[in-house]
Image 1 (cartoon, rainbow, N blue to C red):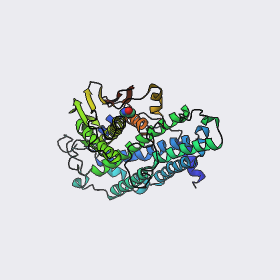
Image 2 (cartoon, protein in one colour; image 1 turned 180 degrees about the vertical axis):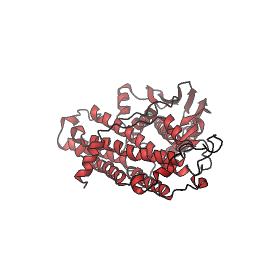
Image 3 (cartoon, rainbow, N blue to C red; image 1 turned 120 degrees about the vertical axis):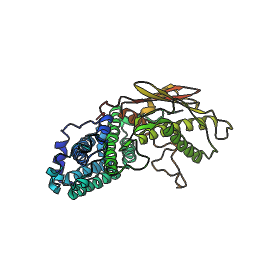
Image 4 (cartoon, rainbow, N blue to C red; image 1 turned 45 degrees about the vertical axis):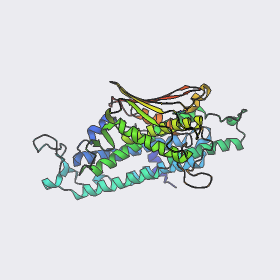
Length: 416
Ligand code: W6P
């Protein structure tokens, strides 16, 4: 399927170190970028993405317990290899004929407008419009957007691969599946930590692509309402606003799923008006996931016919070093013995976890609970920018989820 030469160059790049990018670097780099800055960024990504992809290909090839041989894992590995090929086959600006020398001296945006650096560098105003540059940038963006789309089904497909491994163990009557009680066994630690590394790396790769695509598209004009944005990063992310939206979305899903009217209320308390630098889509994703869990716990503990469910409380605290969001539910908590399972890629309390977002009638049904990957992946999103997620359960009463988000945005991106 892939040429031996390509596979060789994958192995070669997998030996090169990945380059971490901090949130601060993302912002400094993407703030009012000149055409030269955009080009430099694109060139960095054209090199960095193949390095990161190559690391994943090699790891996917060498997984323990036969996981590498599962058809779904092979598919995912092929996507990574294909994306590597797409990027390395793409011409570089030089081979594409971008007159690199014509860009010399254009590094400093605003250098020739009072030194304020407040205006976008406008090449055409200087008679320096470079069609080859625009054409290469456009080609490059098309390529990485295609890569992002290709990898959309990764989480689902890897989950499928883990199921294939479990079925393989069953057929082989492997001791890996020797469960006397019938309770689901946690995955071996090596597989668990592989999945953590793999999904954390995926967050980083998608951050790099998302940021690059966004900077290229907004470099000519700031989209309305995006004055505080640098790419997909908002320098004034309003926690209360994102939390309110995540709460609305989670409650809508809860109503549809349980057929309840309204559902438990979600109260926002504390310093909800805090603004800080973050990726709003990441924040939304984490809060949405946690709130869905709390809603599910409350509805299932108190019943769909309950006339007044206990509120779910979201308390925001602003510290110097981090912002903590506590989400408290009275959903009965989690037994202590079940706590370690929370972070495994199999924990689910959904009665019928399905890989499809459809119910038994085949209708589309919003997944109230997915395939048990929500919580571990939410914690990875928190950790990606130096935060963390902890759960404290009071069995018989409820659960507190503590989401810590780091304010010190100069920590290095973690790169497994
Ligand atoms: C529960 C289980 C859980 C997981 C994550 C967040 C909140 C909750 N509540 O009962």
